[in-house]
Image 1: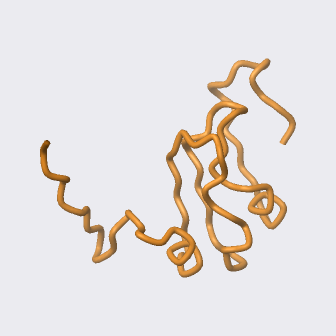
Image 2: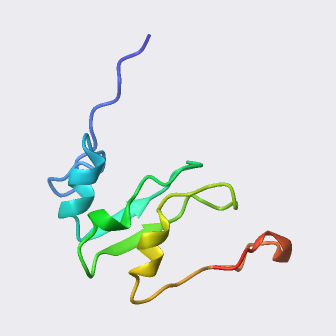
Image 3: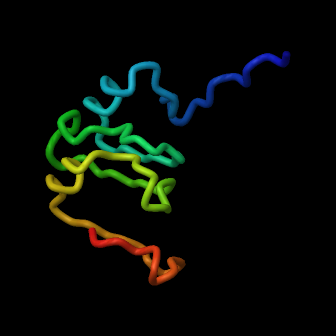
Length: 91
């Protein structure tokens, strides 16, 4: 078995969190790219004004955040340019 790759360091920060909730609670920006069928990020964890960027959940059965993330949003941008019309559900 090969060894795990060394942790990535971006300007002194690791993009990989050992404690997801703690990391989200202290973050100004949360970026996700997962294929998770269950929400990983909870709106209750985020402070007002947190920027959230979700790029992984591209099918109706995928969830990166819970509904509270969207309810709390001051602005919402959705890129539908590559979607089939039948795959877009009501937001």
